[in-house]
Length: 384
Ligand SMILES: [Fe+2]
Image 1 (cartoon, protein in one colour):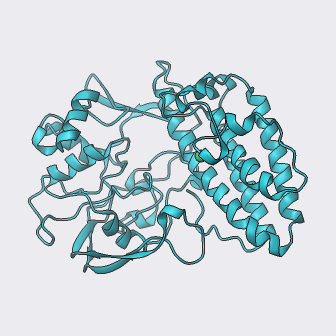
Image 2 (cartoon, rainbow, N blue to C red; image 1 turned 120 degrees about the vertical axis):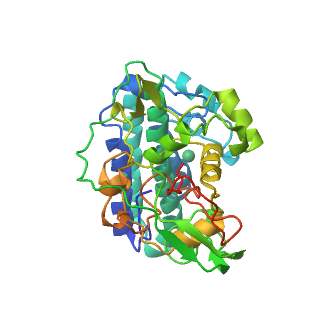
Image 3 (cartoon, rainbow, N blue to C red; image 1 turned 45 degrees about the horizontal axis):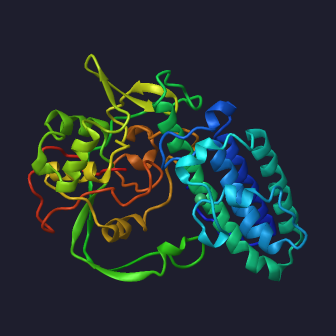
């Protein structure tokens, strides 16, 4: 989520990365009270307290339990209590019931974090170079895992606060940078052919990003900027949510089942659209990238423009050669920035990271390849 080069050469680098990542998680819950941190908005979400505990569980179970010769678990019951879905570790409570865990108290979870952090620093400091070669990949996996949970912590927290009629704020907003108007769409041409996708080389990669392998793509072009809320409003005003032929059939079924008429958290009061943010309910910014839409919605939007979403290979072929830069977690904004405020590379130059999630639903290409169908909107990049 926020590590550009997560390859750590020695114990010192690893300890610094460990401290930074663990501290960052706790910074994200700085403004919360214990009552905020025990509830979950829906069965697939988790309470903030659980995220704090589960990320600690990873290091206790897979690093200290395996590599620390004298380590005694902080509380043996936590091994199953905070297991997510690792069958090899054993039984665990159902995800939908994580909000029932009023015990351990938040203070106990935080004490567990302190204890595990101290043991981890001891272990990393005492391990020789040979041992570190075995240890480092597991620690790096734990840090990447914790970064995933930082993202979940915020998305689950937003879902929870959005259900509260008081519309509470999770954090204090940072002042936004000066903005310019969002750039027009510039297309990134790709000649097609055999391309390689997946992770290889130095630096961290998850196992499902490997092995790197070849894939064949036809020539295509990808929009150089994200779809913004203003684009989405045009789609809505053109009955995008009311025309079944724009939708996949199962997407249309889901639309009816869920009652979708706008992105998640959007609400219209007397003609003014607002959305829930980590800073409470705010007016929808027409120049900010649209978010909290499903794949079905992104697909329907793309069809409305006369285009389609890119495949994973197409997206990666373009994104992998662009710099990893932008509105990352370290910037502290905790929101998608209006395109004209998100840094110099937003002005007429493509960006594929650090704005809205990291999935492949980030652009559109002509169908069939090389033929651009008439489009009522110039913007074409969707974000989920
Ligand atoms: Fe996890």
